[in-house]
Image (tube, rainbow, N blue to C red):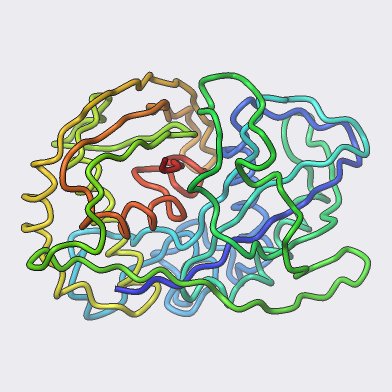
Length: 340
């Protein structure tokens, strides 16, 4: 399987006082969703499933992502995984005064890369509408295409540590980016996407004999297993979730067919990998859903875990997860981890 993606850096400059929650992913994702609907929805339908344009609508594709007719997989679900991931800044700063900069990342997958101008326009419009408590306004100053994938080898601390993440660890770093949009020009240029090649042949020895791997979960991670959220993460549970998410992304957004992947064989192999050390803790937070008019619990685990065993066959999958995240709520930036 191959997955095409591109990660972009958005730089906002506050025009008013902006007050955001400690975890900013919900505010950025919620505000963006409202602005996106305003700028692209033609019929202003409350429910996309009843809209005659849903098969061709950019909003429906990005936010509802209905499985296409004749789909071979995911036939029991109404929506495929969203083709975007917002990566909020991981510091816990909440107040921004006029002139302060707010920087975040946006990863687009497959066909969604072609819709980058819509994302830029929506975030530009959101700045005029305002975000956070009091609807503080901002100006979208800059968008750049990050030339390297985030993650591996970068020292960082999970969100629960309540400390500022070093710039090298994440999306605050704007340097070494190719300029895509600048507020001075108001033009959007294209950028060549990256791709991830996934190999899962368990019948031959892996290219690497990796026997131990540590990973740090930087944002709350919500992984379901047997109907419940898990805190005591096992390797096979992680692999089950990564296989499901990445195969669905590749199928619905990149035109790849995961039929040749031996899911059962991979899961059986993953069950032989053990937890050597686990230091995970629960991070509770909630968000308000305007569409459902309710507050929703969105807690998940952060921290680190070390696995021991035959990890080599899963390395490409784990590296893909660094970019594409894992678990539920990834469009809010949940499920972000790095390998060490």
